[in-house]
Length: 83
Ligand SMILES: [Zn+2]
Image (tube, rainbow, N blue to C red; front, side, top):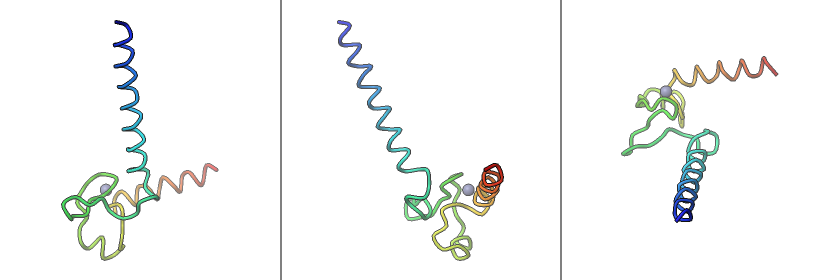
């Protein structure tokens, strides 16, 4: 009887690990450049807001809106400064 509970917990744990692995693949940028496409429309990978056409014209294949990219650039600059 304890075995059933253990098996269920084990199954749940494996599901969580799989979901985490999928999430890491989907996110983390880099591996898959470009905006997130939903119903053929581009969305920012960071905040999920719709990317305006002007943004993609200015930066073809942009993954994020100008606001998120700006924020990310600042974060990266801070990282570089720290190292
Ligand atoms: Zn954004």
